[in-house]
Image 1: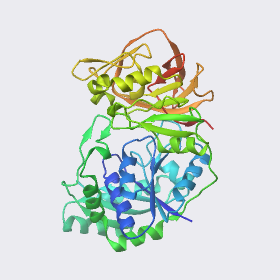
Image 2: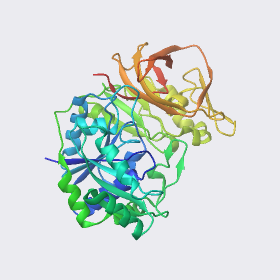
Image 3: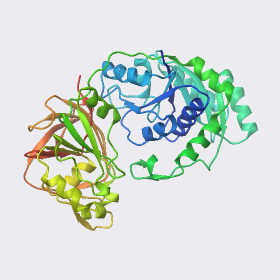
Image 4: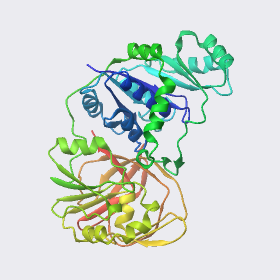
Length: 424
């Protein structure tokens, strides 16, 4: 049975992603069969995990998923693995207001210990009080060890170790050379940089301390698993899925779930001017970065013609929804013609952050009928919107009513929401 552990931090930007990548590759290099997961809604960090392990990384979301759905996914992660490392989201206790969804919630749900990653800059002995506060805040949570990140010197490390004692698993010096570029939705995607392998190996070298790795293995606990639980009915028996740098925000847990339910998936690249399989029952345009490639998409006549001619169901999320519209206005204010299948124009010229969990009730004859758990994260805005049926009734994580989301016109539909799972 695979064992597992959770890597968490007091806040975002504490270095937990880099440390997680280093641990994943260091264990893999040591011959440990390692897999990974990411807490919460995130499309970008899991692709780095996959580069480090060579295995699929699933998102585990205690707000959007039931316990059965999560333990069904952990069963897939545990298959053929010795160790599963789960990277947390934001701070250890951060989550939606008044509802489960934090890293701590997931750790308690799965009865797993937490490794606490601490950005040690600008503090010394006071770090002990911070760790004590986090460790004692919830009595049902086990903070089993601490990784000191970004220590300034040997003396600084000594002060921290004296204050924290045996809780310290590893101490890492501040290293500005290990940095990855970012853009408006997070880190630049893993597949976009040829230096990815060297970056992951450098992260592994940084944490490759034999005693620390052995202690982490000892601290990890058996991972709770159950039988596979479907997360969302597939869009069709055969589904053409867009996949490239502009359409990369598709959750592996959903695609794998569709395949487990019998759906056959094919892949096409709009950026390579490929049309979706004309014989597929459905087309899925996931989110991504179409705003960075708007001119190229507009010029790809084979892709657009194939999409317009497709006779099956067409469903777009976020960036995919934008491409189904009539036009996309880029950050320079230039308008690019899109597929024109929905009466919608979106703009990146005036950026505004839209962020949060969403509860969705289908209103139109769309791909699903049950209540859905989803999230929204984008900076683009709707410039114009024409006459079409609304797709979803929407509420936030706390159940507060929001404006309807998305549009449907005949067989074509989409919204800014990223669906995570069917409500259970």
